[in-house]
Length: 189
Image 1 (cartoon, helix red, strand yellow):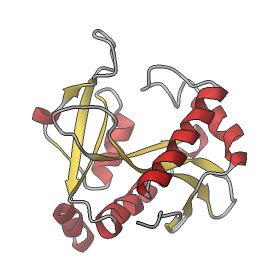
Image 2 (cartoon, one colour):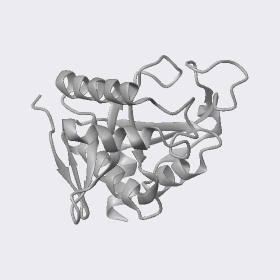
Image 3 (tube, helix red, strand yellow):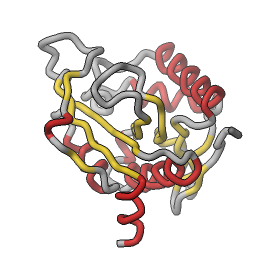
């Protein structure tokens, strides 16, 4: 499959990563507020390694986490996209949708806008039957994005993240799902 290098929404360009994204990405991943639902902020080196893994995902599978750029300013604001879940759980194998935005771009609808476009890519281009998303139970802002894009939550799906140690307050996770049929119904609503 040809890699999906670029997607567009009304206000955003979802594109491949450039080397000059690293300073803004590293600053975002070092922000304790942005990273409060992750084990810890990332160093510049860890952020660069993450970009490398994202590029590898695109090279291998043709899709991944796109860099987000505002069309009006050309500014890098974070990422949104699709990736294969990298651990074993009751719902894997699966493709997840995820996002991370710099704090100054929160609350403007960018995460939902980009996520909606990524869902469309997953269902139309990649012919996925289902897409999942998950986060720490305490991460209500991400759960609101999941709800805004039509994803459904069932408490029976919730799980303990296997990559986090017992006792970690972030270990309890919620799982949201959306099927192609649910997405089509949302489109036509």
